[in-house]
Length: 170
Image 1 (cartoon, one colour):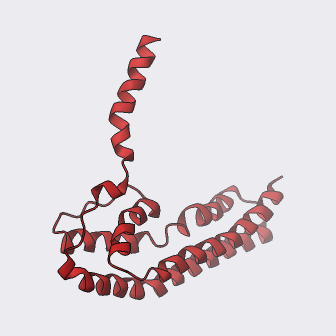
Image 2: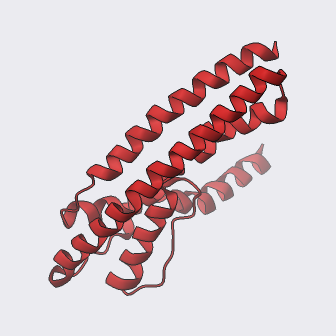
């Protein structure tokens, strides 16, 4: 029992810092650079937005092709898994590169620190890191919100395909 307790305490001691809040690291953009920062961030978002939407559309088209092949040729576990990846991985991470680019610009150019991306392969840690910068510099985030809504909408299409494919498997 003591051994289990000691191991649990060690895990808590060393793992809790990993889950620290991203706002704890917040260092504001210098006031004299705020307008430039806002303009540059919004320009990147504007440039990347259509590319991300196009990539999502391509992922959905790939999912549709998989679905149609399964309907035509019968259930295939590998194709069904790929279809699941479209929903679980491809679509939800469509904007990951955009957020990585925004974090990198923020850190290297405006904070003068080495680029240190949040340790994740998911958008949420990047989003949490950038939120105070967006807020404090009045960055227009409407297109980022539209991307998320579009990801959700397109994921629903893939989920419908998945449900129909799962019925074929039984």
